Image 1 (cartoon, rainbow, N blue to C red):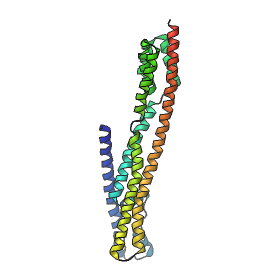
Image 2 (image 1 turned 120 degrees about the vertical axis):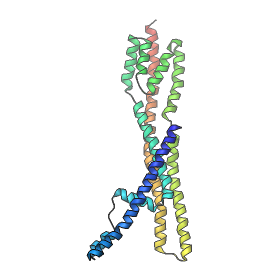
Image 3 (image 1 turned 90 degrees about the vertical axis):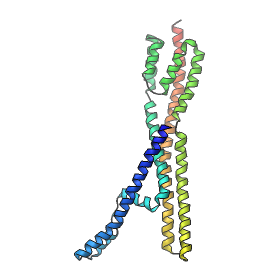
Image 4 (image 1 turned 45 degrees about the vertical axis):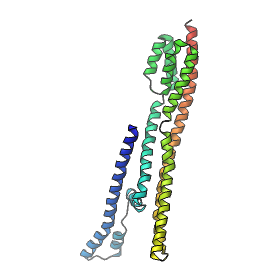
Length: 270
């Protein structure tokens, strides 16, 4: 719950900060041509080059993005931005967690087997305690139950493997929610923008190409941003799923190796 609240707080701060900066930059860009024209008039310069530069200042990528954000109406663009920020935060947290959970399984198995041969159960448990990741946690639970018999070891491995699976998949439902919600919010903003454009046509009493084209362009910007947010989150989501599948396969293979090691250890100690 604390992670969700902190993520929402960070997203709100970043979103409103971005919106404020965008509005400030927009007002600066809008006022800049007037200042340039006034300066040119004061100096007596009326060349077409000066007029064109004053009317159409060049914008870099960030400024263009901010301008499109404002043109799409911050009221509808902000929810899409919030979905993307929170989804990215959850995705990055999962990527970091899964990468930290990935270990050299072959080396770990060799270390555990060597510890079982030389120091027994306690030495193997120490190796598991000093190793991060779900595989080490499963091994620790299985080795800890080894005095109760091989059947208990198998049950412990299966049950605790399910617990580790839940920890690996934690937060995926929220990421999938934001993947679906981002384009939906974009479509909603587009529909509302189209309605407003038609209302303006009805109010003017005539169909103006400029009014229709401008209204449709502004309305479609929310859909574009929503689709971009969904595509970015989808890439992270698929990467996370592939990492989870790889870890699950390693957990299953390692669990079989653990059972074999426990049988071998039990045989050699009789």
